[in-house]
Length: 505
Ligand code: NAP
Image 1 (cartoon, protein in one colour):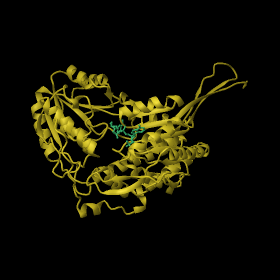
Image 2 (tube, helix red, strand yellow; image 1 turned 30 degrees about the vertical axis):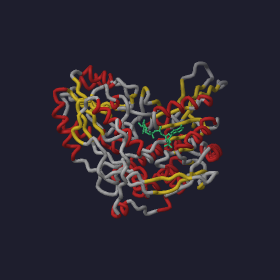
Image 3 (cartoon, helix red, strand yellow; image 1 turned 135 degrees about the vertical axis):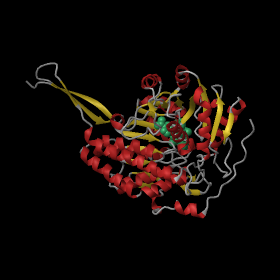
Image 4 (cartoon, helix red, strand yellow; image 1 turned 90 degrees about the vertical axis):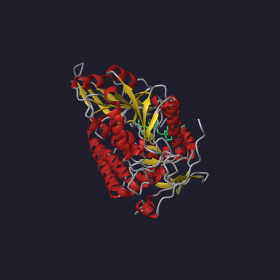
């Protein structure tokens, strides 16, 4: 395979920059946020945060390490003693105040996501609303962490089950949804009575730090929410402190399967409660009896949202033989209409997050073509340069190609052909992953059969927009375990205590 071409820089226009200008420049916090104070890294080192659209420097952020990780855990531990004791309805009120702050600053938060992550402003606005929905939902749920009373087994006895916060929780989050991934960990943790220490991704620390600042402005007490930014080089050092600290009782991680497995092993010595939201490789199956208009729309949404960089993005698109050519033709028409560009304009597809991501997408497409796939549209870097990649449709794709077993995380739609339902199910299940799966069919018996047969934590049936705060989000197999959102998401931060009360007769 040819070496990747040198990256050409794109320059964002003054008008596009103007759209992304923050009303409140003080929302850009460049230090760690510990006990409601800005904290510099102990060696005063920083790392650059750049706009992936044009490479411009947004800020130099404190590159924290073990000292700041420990200080954050100390602060969270101190705060836990009182936070766990306040009334659930007071915690709910705190979360509602935080929600108010997030809504008040929603446009700035969206701009911040767009400048550090690159997604179009419309998608960033949707992400802020999605993150806010978790805060609202768990503010309400805080009041419903019910226990149980079980019929006694002997006279004069009561069997009572209570649910308590697990303790200090650690959160490690990725760059693709820098606000939403963190909000859906912090909100249930705080609702349950836990305090939190968080490490955002190197590429997108600013959104997370702004969320912490707004939590403080909402009156959430010091030490309850702490954010420790770090470069990729220091990520392990920060995590190691929390993994080995017995006071940190829980780790909620969203990211790649490789890092998730490493964290699971490394946390064994302190036996932490774990939630692991890991990589996906979602199959998207279209049967011959599907509503094709709906399936095309769903495919575009499930594949191209966030430039293909979501864990539930359709990665392998299986089309029934009878409709394969028509689907491919219509997919090309739809993809040709997608507008690519920087976030400040009217783009629907932004740049990839960094050079590593771009090179991975190029590798997947080159490998597919080498093994016989044909590019119907796209298939190369976009003329805008930088990390922009053309929305792509590939046909004649098969299981010999790397993109059939690895997550591409880019705007590439590979179309596989299948002949029978059994073949489609078997291909869909033929990866170690099991996060989301989608299929389109109007045959109700098939809908029930295929839903039951798919090995995944979530299934979209004639529906691509499956994420919502009211439903349990999470995977099976190498996509991890634990759920976020819904009452199941709250359970992750609660532990069960059984009280046996005797001598009552
Ligand atoms: P990643 O490399 O695993 O990074 C995720 C987070 O882990 C980042 O904060 C990262 O910091 C940190 N990290 C990296 N190495 C670490 C280490 N040795 N110890 C502790 N922390 C470490 O994942 P990514 O490739 O950036 O993110 C995309 C992946 O996340 C995809 O696989 C995607 O499917 C998955 N994802 C899953 C879900 C879900 O809900 N299941 C949601 C979104 C994304 P740095 O950024 O500094 O490296």
